[in-house]
Image 1 (tube, one colour):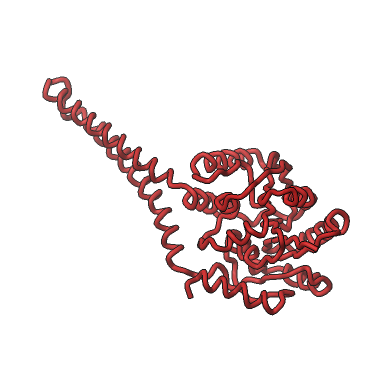
Image 2: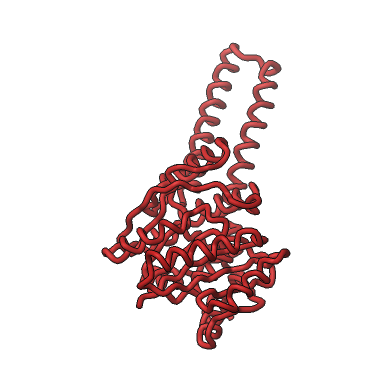
Length: 329
């Protein structure tokens, strides 16, 4: 029997754990009964009963595996660490515990995978969220799709099923801030998408703040596109060219007596503010790339784990060794 691994990151999700476990169990009992399941929960140092509830389920079902982090390392690193631990023939990279991405879609993904596609990704055709947030996401992903060198379909999220070869290729990528939804397409292979509705949360509210979403968005652009730096270069060139032409024109008009020095003071002040703002913007942009380089060269571990549950001895030693190798130690 083939094994399907499913990675579910969680942080303070005590109200959603049972629903997630039961939903996945139902899918494999009714539609994927000829497959084994490996459901990996990656806990990002929850402060509620999340880990306690997970341990209760893991005690009665060894297909449920748990990785508990020593602190909150962010959703990107936490989820990718779970992917590194996955051993299945195919891996569902991200199934949120709040079930906003529907587990009922997994059987269709598996059928497409069995037909020869190495990457089967979900396309969030509809989103059950506030209109301003929905349009902001759409605008960002279309911008990202245009800027990146990767053939990335807009509205594709981390809810993807990938073949073992793709998962192994992802493991070889040493990235301090792994942006998985782009990483899979960067690996290549045959891919296809399935449209679905991204549902509203069943319990509570998202722990992903606006500042975190902004950081993740910038990470996606910086990691997979050099376009912003090139745009800054071109923008600087055109602004400098305009400034030279403007200076020449003002000099000629002044010498011809059409412009007096005193009335030009407001223009100088406006120009100083304008060029100062342009410089600060470009410095901030370059700073994002420098920060990405800084995070990468520090060679820190992806995450630091406090404990693992239901992983056999070989897996317990194998994956940390890979993480240690990635950290340069």
